[in-house]
Amino acid sequence: MSMLDQAAALLPEMCRLRREIHHHPELAFREVRTAALVADTLREIGGFDIRSGVGKTGVVGELRNGAGPTIGIRADMDALPIHEATGAAYSSTEAGLMHACGHDAHTAMLLGTAHLLKQRMAAEGLQGTVRLLFQPAEEDTGGEAMSGAPMMIRDGAMEGVDAVIALHVDSTQPLGQITLRPGFSSAAVDSFKGWITASGGHGAYPHEAGDPIWMLGPVLMALHGIVARRIDPMKPAVVSLGQVHAGATSNVIPGEVFLHGTLRSFDPGVREQLLTEVERALALARALGGDYRFEIERGYPAGSNHPTVTAWLHEVAGELLGAGSIDTTSTGTGASSVAVKGGRLYTMGNSGNSDVVWCLDALKGTEIWKHTYPQPLDARQFEGGPGGTPTVDGEKVYTLSHQGDLFCLAAASGKVVWSKNLQKD
Image (tube, rainbow, N blue to C red; front, top):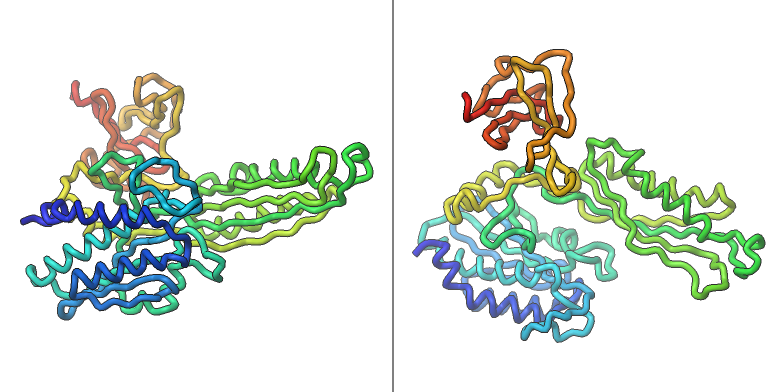
């Protein structure tokens, strides 16, 4: 029986586990019932050395079979403070709590993996150790000084681990398709809190108050201008506000405005610059006669997939599901295409005999703009040529087909290396 067939046979049990966890959601570092279910299930499977209470409410299960590498496989367990209104038979029994981010599925899937590994490691003579990491507190710190991952690391969960594998369900992807790519897979995340303070007063006498709500206007303009005007446009970044609170009634000018937002980035330098720029924006209140306070909660660093491990997963996923089931498109807040009237734009053109590059609507093929370069681009200058994977000044180039034409584009700049009409040539 293939591994895919064995996984399909486990589907009823995995559904039962997922629905049981969904039925009883628990917040960060309160995953007591979930952790007990995990530990009990691993005991039933057998063969695992089990440690509970790792990182407060985390669970580690280890399966060994001789000498070899140690591979960690991780799933998160915590739920969110969201009211569930799905009406499902297995919906949350806890008021105001819900598994809305898929951690119930992650946990059930890792328990299904435990079943498969127990069956196949000994049967196929696989050598090494698999360490299953059931992580608490991914969504929040739960009032602790750190979230679940660093707390499990502190408690030794990662000692001796050579590589870690994890996944996240994605409701935007078609069933049976997975996204897999080397390099960055998730952004660094930090959150900030800011307080703009000034003297309050009666709404009928605004000239006698400092008015932090008035000061909020230029602060908001500065915050939303950080990415557009302070950050290198080739380095993705996000500044988003999720909360702005002030006042309690219509005719009283409050003495404080509270802001709460999130920062996302990939580049370590940009990550630090965002913190500096947010504080500079808040400091505008001082120029208007007010003051500010600023707090940062450092979150996770940017996640980056190791190319070797990614290649392993790509090979195995291709064997199990077929190469067409693997999505390798780019991630993050940056993108290589933008929407224009429902279409996508790509930089296209020909080279060797021409120095013109066009930007075309990929759906219609209509011209958006064109640019004439001083020197023609010659495909013969580049190692690999048509059909290969050359580089231009260290930048990878890729092929793109559209309405019978094949183009080779530089991945970041969009410059055309070569093009070919497949119907005529």
